[in-house]
Structure formats: structure tokens, C-alpha cells
Length: 331
Image (cartoon, rainbow, N blue to C red):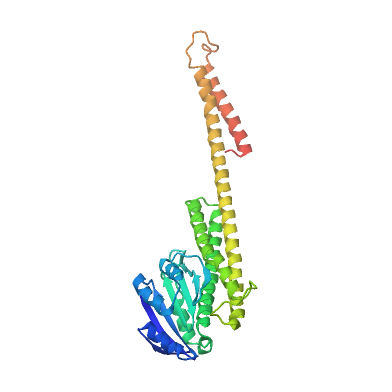
């Protein structure tokens, strides 16, 4: 659905229109105006009308409708198409949720398409409308603010995940066995979240590098060259996020390895204890088995003290074995 269709002139919102074609014509009639259309999970027929009005490329439209795209930047004849994946942290479930934002930039227009609830667009619009000086730069200001807000959210999510990882690490190395139940599954689920986070942050480096002019190629069309330093600043923040994500991924792998090693050591301790108790039970079983064979000619069968002597031998041997196992740490 079309969430909002507004015309901005000299950094101020000058009106709202229900007809995208009329809004675009009005914006192009002035040198300092542009139209911003925001769509949320649009239907194909609804988006087809927007495509015809703004001359959007069919391949970009297909990507915007299907969603589930990697962050990227594509340049067409009449527009610029960029995909950004916002990430937000759910405090209730301690998980990350992702969405998708597609931005079309062209002559005097910007079209934003969002999928899912995780989106910075409402806050971006409020921020820009409260800052006319920034909004004077037109569609470029919208693209920069969307990217900046998304990367700022990345930093917050990375901080939250770092806190969760510290708690998980403390649980793994806790001496209490109660905290180790389902620890392996929690570590694995945390690693899945880091991987999902990484899929959103790492591919975004290439588009931001192009927008910042770091590739050495020609300037990106429909984007003011004066905005390159601002995109470079966003790209620097993204680099910090990617380094943090890389560290999180490496640390969670190390924690998983440490947990599996602890489980292996714990299982070896259990096997040693089981083996020690089995050895203690084997000595009296052996002696009782020998003297329980009921042969006619066996030594000490008619000796008066045979029974207490055999019991004493069993006890002495078990005591010696027990002390030996205790010294070795098996019991």
C-alpha cells in the first residue's frame, strides 16, 4: 500500500497527493522540489502504477516486490536502486529481526519500499522533516539518512549481541552444571543470529563504498557529489560494525569449541568413575565366583575361618583399590 506521498520544496513539506503522477509533475515544475513516495509491502498491481509514473526499471521493480534481496546498489538509465537490510534487536526474546528497505532515486523523486516491520523509514522521515537544511539536498538526503539510521541501528544491535555473548560465556565457564543444560543449542542459535546479522552488514560495504567515491570510478548518478564525505562517514561506521560482527562470530565459535571440550572432559570423568566402581565390584565378584563353583576338592573348603578370611580379603583389596583410585582422581 502507498503509505505516504508528499512533496517537499526548499526542505519543507509543501503538500500531500494521492496521485503520484500529479505529484511528480508538480515537483519537476520547480527546481528545488521533489516527491517522496513511501510504500509498505505493495501489491504488484499497485506498484505497477508507480513503476509507470516514475519509469522504474522492471528488474528493480521485480526485486522490490519479491524482497529477500542482498544489500546492493544498481544504476539504471532513469533511476538508482539500492537495497538495505535494517536489523533490530528484540529485547523480549533476545533475538535480532531483519527487514528490507528498497530506495529508488531519480529526477526529482525518491520511492522507498519496505518489507517487514523492522524499518527506520518512519523515524527517518520525522528526522528529515525536522531538519529542513538537510532536506534541501533532496533525494540524496533521504538516501543518506536511511543508510545512516540503518548503520546506527547496526551499532546498537552489535552492542546488545556483545552483552548476550558475555552472559553466554559466563554460563559456559560456570562451575555449576545446572547452567549447562541446552547450552550447546543456545550457542548454536546465537551463532545463527550473528550469521543473519552478518548477511545484512557485510554486503552493504560495496554500495556505501561506491556512494562514498572509494572505488575510483565515475560518480554515482542521481546522487550529489557533495554527499560523498557523508557517505564515507557512514561507511566508516559500517566498517566498525563489520569488525565487531567478525569478532562476535569468532568468539562464539571459540565458546562452542570450549563447551564441547568441557563436555568431553566431563564425559571422560564420568567414564573413569564408572570404571573405578566397576573394578571395586569386580574383586568380590571374582572371589565369590571362584568359591561358588561347588567342586568337591577345593582348598580351604573345610577350614573353619575360610568364610571370614575371604570376606576380609575382599574388603582389603577393595580398600586398596579405592585408595588408589582416589589418589588418581578417578573417585
